[in-house]
Image 1 (tube, rainbow, N blue to C red):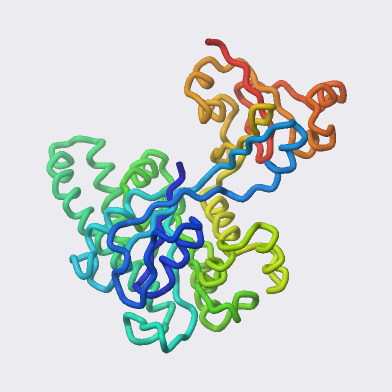
Image 2: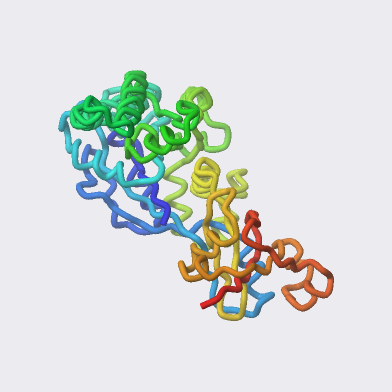
Length: 367
């Protein structure tokens, strides 16, 4: 399952946002640093209205959305890479995630203490990035010390690994997130870089946390964050953790009405999850029948056998072909596979078919 780590300085609204994400009140929210002592984990359904359109068409009671696992990691502080605050244990938790959601405080509130004494989103971002970069550099130094001995003996693979680690180490001095796809042209080097488990190479989303009054248009703080995100190839969403927590208490109908009153078409959490999918280049295909309507997450460019393997490895091993119809065509046929086949809208695809977002699929495989 996709894992996203929520990080940020103390008192930026991290735990409040986590509460809203999971609709659970198990992450404490208090006006002091380190109120989150252990990482909280919550599984959040990915909003997808298509599943609920399909539900009555295929006459099923069961809908299973795909999901994202969010990990709420305690507030980092300056010096975390050297063990300040509760540093090292939380840096380890970040390493285990696929993407980082960095919550940035973009609101003024004299009643909520800022750990640095003033609100400055770019300084906050720099603090977090610096601590992650310093921790990554320390990790690389240890690995390079070991690998250099093997490389000096003439081992070609070790030499390539040393070259990659040195390139990453030099880039980390910039204290920004690194896009390894742009940094490495060679496929072998890129593979080594991606397997390095460095925190600074993970895709990042900046969640600009604002007051309820700035959620529509943002403010001067959010403009700074937006410019920074664009410059560094990251995603940015404006979110009001306070509003999201209020929405979590409402029914879907009440929440929709509340959003309309605010002049918003979708919640900040929905935008954030969409950003996660966009950043990681993810797609969704669907299986639909009387038993259930279920969404499955794949990476863009995934071919049919590998998509089948997401359901079960046996599906990929014994893959014969896939029956495929687009979501739009299936809805137009009112959920009838028979009508879809009669109209020529149901296709049989082989091993080279690249699955598209919204494809409704049925796999045929040999046992």
